Image (cartoon, rainbow, N blue to C red; front, side, top):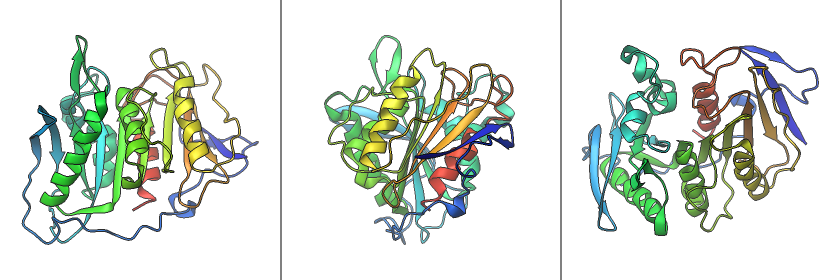
Length: 310
């Protein structure tokens, strides 16, 4: 059985819903105890900006964002945000991935809009993918090289800053969603929760048996990575997290709505949430009209899901 709510703008609809859309307060929370990293209580070794390291004899880069007013005695959440195919860490870190808005408000959409929602409570990382074909950068994860990159970022940032190691999160769009899925498989015990926007099985899945709280978002008319590919990721988590596997409803084509489904019967602390929206391969869908970053519901919903584990 699943619980679902149809959302139209800010109105809740759907008389057939089994329960109201849950708030953060009535979703079971993680019982993880704060685990300060080696960098806590020490002078910071890292500052915001582009960082460079060598992984498997390849130069790798990521953009780091340290909270304003950083306190070395406060363990911070650590949130990864993986860019899509042909995109870049710069677009994610600056908000410029939303190209049809003015630069004066792009910071609001940095890290898929989560930087704004975090209100300086999290350290953010936007990794840069490798260029493995003529079209641009992505996350092929050949031989697990991108997983190793993440391992090294986790170690470096944990040593250089104060991180709560029980509150690591991964998010990603498109190819980045595939990378987030790969991380959940290979390093599921190191992440408190993950969220994939329009993702698919693109970066592999090694040792994918560990349950991980999962949020998936996908457009019903996605022409790039059809929704069936996103459902495959979701269904894997439904199985791993011990949830009841029931068909989730989808909004009707042309309705310009989204429907949130919370699967029931999941292992305690390992929820699965699925959001299907009437749209295509989009990062910031909007109910009731075309994409408009000032009205998208995605940052709030993703933050709601991740923050329950804080």
